[in-house]
Length: 453
Image (cartoon, rainbow, N blue to C red):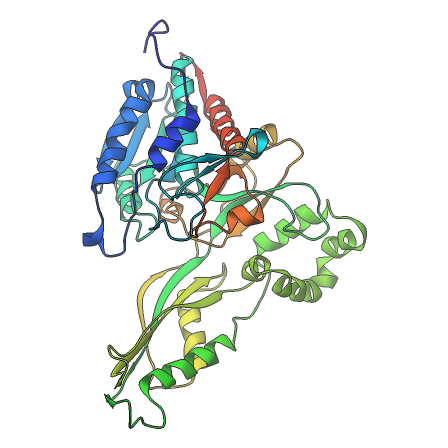
């Protein structure tokens, strides 16, 4: 776009609010998805970001995922900035502000924007688009190709991201840096450390969707057997819950403890700096300190769905429980399934594994890609400690480990414990000042990758 071409002023917050108002809810049963909001989302982007769409090539991949390419001036390895625009389903029940109204509340630094997707993950997507739009308008061009990869079904199965990776792989593309959602700037999560901490995911846990099933004769509920299908299943669940996976520190855990421990105060500084002696004690501390720290040091298991009889007065002929397992780095899907088998100790409880992904490879915490990410975080959030960690949830970035050794997971927003608790829950919201700080992060990151045309 010529430098003297008139353009509308950038209005990041209004852009975010417009896109949050589109209920792009992905569903496990694909046929239940309403694709109209997805189409509206795709159609809105050229109007909101005209300079970007004039300068970048856009492909629609896998039905509704988006892949943009900004051609670089050189032939170096490209960068991929990722996000997803689908959200988990929400209704208005229980919300202080409707989930798809994008309402504002408060003033000044306490102003909030409410809505499903503000944190997960339209905030990051809009911030990345704003950063590229600003760079195009400033007359910049990347030194190497820059890609934007926006998935449409990250919250379910991630077929869009997989299709994008397949496409890039077929073209022989190996990115030098891939950045997706993940960790954030947080406070109060590590004992003895008062400074804000930017946790950057260098790996993520594997996922196992496991089904426990009991098939048994049914009948009238007035003459129940000693152990019905539902009772047998309940016993298996109780046994599993009483036997958590063993805890242990991975190499990334150790690096995180050493990084943050250098900033701790009092006896904790000594404890974190002498892991060779204090590791057993610290493992117990992490396992009990909070749900988050407990999940950092072990594979986790959670029963999330139950089904039984179709009638109140009929015995279940089939009882089923879904167990969501997050596999720790250094472990495997096979180890997780075997743990469940040993824990429930009942051959009449069938174990099925309809979906499984191994833990992701660990990306390095040195080199140009890591340093660019670290230095940009510190520029935007001065005084923040940057540390690697293993991401507890899953993201589309796990698919990109097939084509890149430098895959990182970081959302450039400051999130309180309460705000993190709204992810996939009611009252998801973000401080407007935090969102604008995220826009600044991507603007600086993109500028670092670009040069004057």
